[in-house]
Image 1 (cartoon, rainbow, N blue to C red):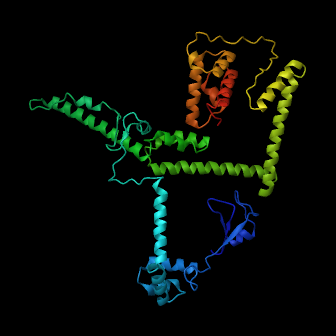
Image 2: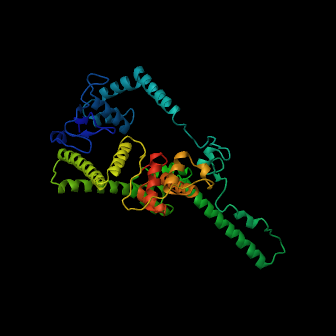
Image 3: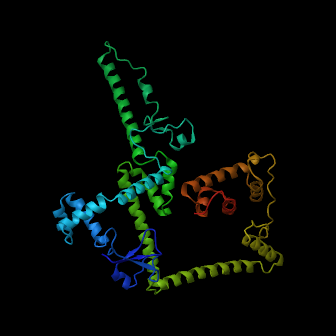
Length: 419
């Protein structure tokens, strides 16, 4: 109901408030009560000094409802103008107004110019794209040929081979004829299964698998796991119903996380969002202090050995400056550290760069195994959109310390990203 309030700082999308909520200082998500605002109302003239913007919209809605020319019904629906006033105003400003017509033309041309470089409208009569074999577009489309609605390699691609030697002749016995008909029926069932699978791929938009995987990654990790579990049921329900199911669970996850955050505030005795922001700031500060105390306890372990303490300080200085630690940490176990691995003559060494060779020497890992572990971690990172240390340890069944060094190296060199 007009007038209403529009926040000048929130958006997009725009944030609107009724007058009652505005007077109470209502706050929601990013909107705060001290934001600048605008008063929105339609009580002002647009085309005619005696017609407000609200009456202009009411006239257009009445003409749409009652039909052009039924001016008495239009006037009855508006209640504020007579039949003659409605007809005269509509004909003057919306039919015979050259400025209004040119404005509509300019808007149409601007809309066409906006979409000219971003999207090409596709109609059923247009010639579909025809990517060449083994091109990048063809690989992205999994070998799909839109002009034929077929794949380069179909499901059950050799189903026709069972029919190549079958020939129906008049002197076939009844049993032989029945056997040949059974083979044809089997072939028909295999064709139906091929069409069913193609329909699922087409309806669910699975032709471009890369784009489909990018869409999955916009969900939180918990929703991605649900997506992976429920994917097998997508063939039973339609694509719209399946997407609604996933979106509803994503919304439920967001609501549960928000409720958990609010419950944490309530447990801490917080009753307004201003105090909540202070609480979050103090909580972050406490976490940073706790991390510093952990680092200090690590220093105290080496304080009795001055050389080890100096090594630790130099290592922390390298980490703070963004460099890789140049000084390895000393060990208190009393065991002698193993010498670096000699990579001379080992298969796969030529595929490593200098930093990777240095890593394999320090962790005593043969190049072939390192390349295999690296490939597994890269594939999992690309699939999940990020990788945690726990996931890396689950993939690589070796010493956890070596896994940690490989994981940190790949993160530092930019091969993978943290989840």
